[in-house]
Amino acid sequence: KQEVTQIPAALSVPEGENLVLNCSFTDSAIYNLQWFRQDPGKGLTSLLLIQSSQREQTSGRLNASLDKSSGRSTLYIAASQPGDSATYLCAVYNNNDMRFGAGTRLTVKP
Amino acid sequence: DAGVIQSPRHEVTEMGQEVTLRCKPISGHNSLFWYRQTMMRGLELLIYFNNNVPIDDSGMPEDRFSAKMPNASFSTLKIQPSEPRDSAVYFCASSFQSGSSYEQYFGPGTRLTVT
Image 1 (cartoon, rainbow over the protein chains, first blue to last red):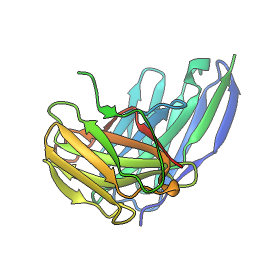
Image 2: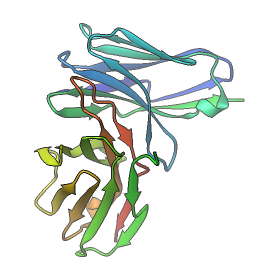
Image 3: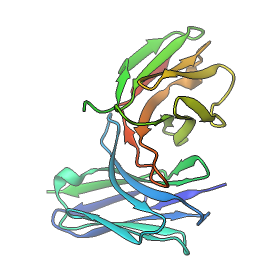
Image 4: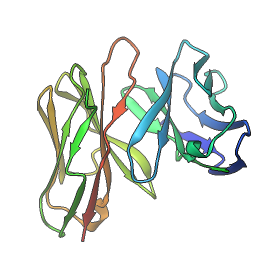
């Protein structure tokens, strides 16, 4: 059974810092890995999707990497802004099942 | 496109009542997912449809939960009878399943409170 872990559970940084969020999974036989953002009281917004054959994806200030063999993914956020404050979740898809991590709650202080 | 639409956004009901949650996926998407999110258990996949057919309902907690997808543009998740422990946010998501690409788009969720 796939298990997804996100570290740290919470992170607080000053505005402008670059930061890395971590996601690890136990079963490397995945179809893809997806990073989401969730704002309080709202649904999930898809940020980046990495296919199993890919090693990274970039969108603006966001860069996600995938290392299947080690069961790890990182989400890099450059030049963080207060508007980046949210909970970030990673989800792994395999065998018709999607497993989510518990998320990292990010606070970017002005 | 308006995105995934869910209704109602909030539902408060008494224990024992029937609850029906509704979802309209993004037009053209062929897969639909129902999730439940709680503080204790995080986000859990309940059931997954592909081309209106339930593929995997192993995440449905018990027989009180049922889901239907009568056509490509509508799905329901029903809880009967409801219990306080069913209180959670229920998300619907849709995707266009092509090869190994399953990027999902989520609705805003329905916050269910059972008293």
